[in-house]
Image (cartoon, rainbow, N blue to C red):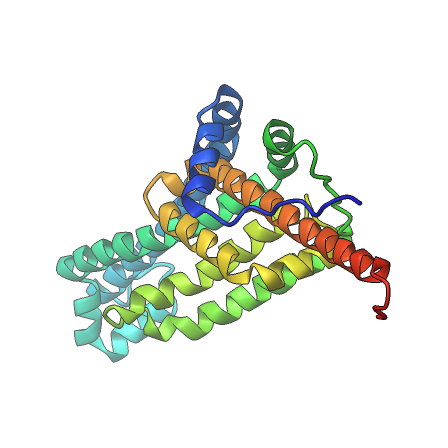
Length: 284
């Protein structure tokens, strides 16, 4: 009778060390440049568009404050300047524009980092099958990749997570400027989306739907611990964009190991059941 395979115990430090050794190979380093370049282009484009609108609004406010009747394109701002000249003078002043501009780049810069991380997660999703396949070839050739989750199921999942992300984002907005609590409030929606998209992308390349549910149930906290560490790393400027391939490698190792544990446990249960059946005088 075939004995049940030995199941390795989780080891976070070994997991990251193994992933790091993979990442610093020529193939993965070259592969990591594609998500980095694409994300940087999109992030700078979005920041340029948003900052342009913001400073156009400040310029219109200044023009309306100085001469409401002559303001061009100010619309409601010109009307506001006529009704509230003191407030408009403050809004159009150099000091206000300097302070507002500084706050925009501080808060906007933080949000830009978070948005760029999510953009990078979405972009690296297109490279995930290639990364998972390479990790399997290097370390887990005997572990089968089932990957039978339907595309439509994945699309519905992503849409649902984005809707939840927007809901959490709206609910958290009032807390953004509360000391200490604001840091958690700002990061929670982005970590939620980071965790959901990244884990589903990688797990979907290894498990079928039922196995995926079972792994997320059994290893929920182990997986959450890993993604939290990865998310904190992603907040370091540059790492969140350049390190996405490394993040997928880490989770690939973790999910292949979880697959070995899950399937090994099932074999152990089957072996135990067969032993019980083979023993005389023992009925199930």
